Amino acid sequence: MAAMTNHQPTEIDWLSHVLTEKIPLGGAMGLFVQRLDWQGVAFSMPLGPNVNDKGTAFGGAMASAMILAGWSLPRLLLKRENQEADLVIGRCEIRYLKPVKGGFDVECDWPEKSACDLFIADLVAKNRSRLPLEARVMVDGEVAATLSARYAALKRI
Image (cartoon, rainbow, N blue to C red):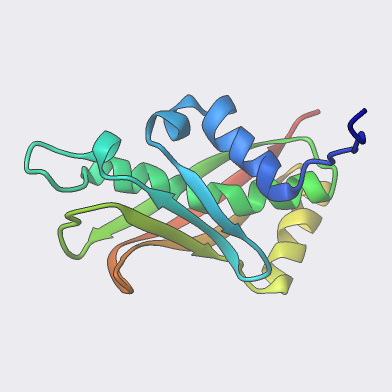
């Protein structure tokens, strides 16, 4: 008889499920969570489902992947703090710096701890909060696109 184990889902398992099952676009894009750690989050994205008519990565796919990378961090903060809130992107600015001719990575770093603490404190006190984040598309160690965004959480009451 095989030994039974209790598999507790890790945060990366949880995030992967949310980004590819609860948000079907992530699954359709072939999003794979490579890393979720103290530094931030990183995805890998294949070119195939994200290609445009020129054979390069579609700008909308890169934008969506960067938005999801940024969205992942405040969503995780809310989960860790047991806060029920709707999380949306409030505004963003995207810069495309060079064409992407193959698969690409997307990264978003954690903001300062004080910004994360304020995000949760404002949500508890005011039922809403904001968190600015920066994400980027990386190809061969070079930045190919950037996103500056502000995410908003609205407490479910």
